[in-house]
Length: 387
Image 1 (cartoon, rainbow, N blue to C red):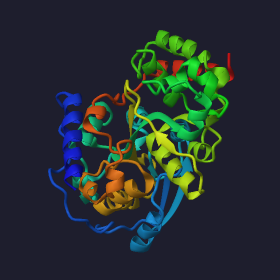
Image 2 (spheres, rainbow, N blue to C red):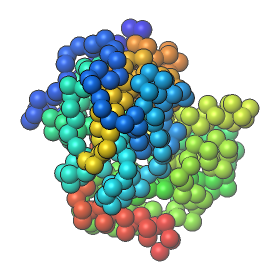
Image 3 (spheres, one colour):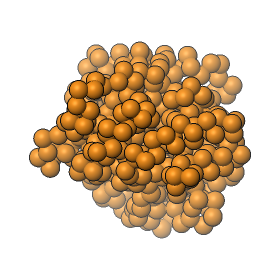
C-alpha cells in the first residue's frame, strides 16, 4: 500500500515540475471527498445518455451499474482513432453527449467551440483527481480545467510477443532502445517474418517517428515531417499491419511486435493467457522514453442530455470506479483517491504505473498547428501507401 502512495507522490512531483508555473488556478480541491449519488440535482431530461468512447476501454458492468442506479439508459458506441472522433465532432450534430478525446485533439476541439464548459457544481467527485495531472491538462490543453476530466492515461510504446520475437531474431540480441525494433531495418527485416503492426493513426505513428530521429515529437516544422517520412520509408516493406484492432492482432499472434498503447499491450497479454497461449506478451520501456497520453471526458457543445452527462462523469470519478478501470483495463487512473484500491499486481506493474525515474523520461503531450496536422497526415499517407 505504501508503494502506491509513494508512486502517486512521485508522479505529482514530476508532472508539476514539468509544467512550470501555472498560469491559471487548477479547479480541484486538495482532498478527496466521499462518493456522492450520481444525480443529486433535480434533472428533468429524458433518461438517456449517449457516449462515444475508445474500444475496449471500460470495465465490464460499469454501464449497467450506472443505469441501475440512475434509471438513465446509456447508448455506448466506440471509435478506434482520434481522427475518427474529431471528424464526427467537426461535422456537427454528432448525437453524442460525452466523448473521450485524447488531449492532443481536445485542445483544438475546445478552441473550436466543439466542447462545452463543465458545470463543476454537478461533479462533486472532481476532488478525487490528481492535482498534478489536472495541472498538466490546465497548462497544456484546458486552461482552468474548464472542459476536460481524465478518463485514463498511458503511453505509446513498443509491445512484443517475447516468444516469437526471440525466435525471429535468432542470435541477434534485443536492442537497448526498443524503438529500434520497429524503426531500424536491421531489426524489422528479421521481425517481418512474425509480423510488425503499427497503429493506423498518423497522430500516433508520426510523433514517435519524430522522437526516434531526435526531433520534437509534436513539431510544427514541415521539414521535420519530411525527415520522419524518409526514415519510415526504409522499413515500410517490413510492416505487415496498420491496425485498428491492436489488442486482437497482438493477442492472436498476427503481430509479434507493435507500436501501440501500453494498456492495450497489457490487455493483449491477459487475453493471450485466457486463450491458453504459451506466448508471453509484454509492453516495453524504450530507453529514450515513450510518449504519454491523457484521454479525457468532455461534453459536446450540442449535447442533448448535459445533466445526465454530468451525472455519469461524477459516477465515473468515484474512487472505487477509478480503481476498477485500472484493475480491469490495465491503464493507470488519474484518480488519486482510487489509487489505494488498485490491486497490487497492477499497481506494481512498471509498464502500467511506471516508476518515477522512467516517468521523467517520457514525452508529455502537446498539440499541432493546422498546417502541421496536414503535413503529418500527408506524411503518414505517403508512408502507408509506400510512395
